[in-house]
Image (cartoon, rainbow, N blue to C red; front, top):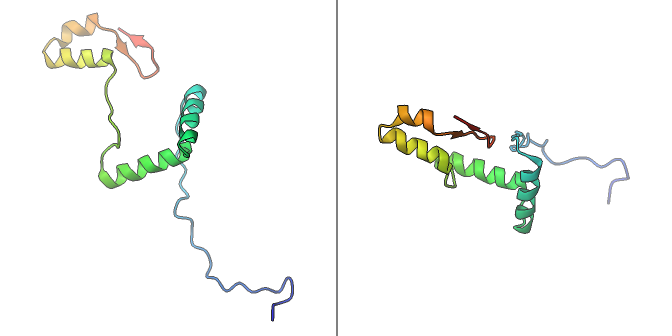
Length: 104
């Protein structure tokens, strides 16, 4: 016989803390966020899905799961430093900053 409405007893154990309750924030431009969200939506993913997969893969493999490289301007600076031309190059080459601005 079914219990009367409002008199149902819970037989499940109390729920444990959700293991995925940590929030990760990243600052990006609105344009980049919207463009990435559109690409990911076409793949059936969200930005949160991508970040979660990246964090999990990085933690398990101890490697970044994609290639990270230097911009051409910054690569030319590294090449000149490695060739022993750092002092001269530091006055002649503009450095590209993450914001897209240059300094030099």
